[in-house]
Structures are given as structure tokens and as C-alpha cells.
Length: 100
Image (cartoon, rainbow, N blue to C red; front, side):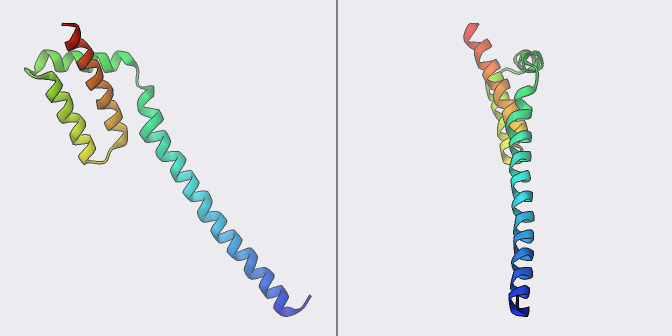
């Protein structure tokens, strides 16, 4: 193997190692975001969601608007986990108000 061939082979492996590391970090970031924004908020017990929905219904004259406002604040802060949390609370409030 010539010197040029050896240098090319070394350069090729350095590029593979660099971009492989970048790809691994990107995949890890995507998995982390899916966990924190989509899966983890859905693991919050329904009893807590119902408790917060009951609190909102008891303490506010327009509970659906209050739940929507909290959901919107989470949206403006780009907090995906909190958005999912307040979406679940909004659904619980809506169900309770429809039953009444």
C-alpha cells in the first residue's frame, strides 16, 4: 500500500468516526425529545389529571378557558411535555362539563 493510499484510508476512517459520532448524537437527541415530550407526559396518572381538572372547575368561572390559557402558555414556551399535560387536563375538563 502506498503512502497516499494509507493517508486516504486514515482520512476515510476519521471522517466515518466523526460523522458516525454526529449521527449517534442526533439519534440520541431525537429519542430524548420523543421521551420527554411525548411519552413521559402520558405516564402521568389519570388521578392527578382529574384532580387538576376538578380544581380548575371549582375555582374558575370559565374552566375550559382557564385550561386553554394554561395550555397556550405552555405552547408559547415551547414546552412539549407541559403542552401534553394541559391537553389532557383540557380534555378532562371538557368531559366533566359535558356531563354536567
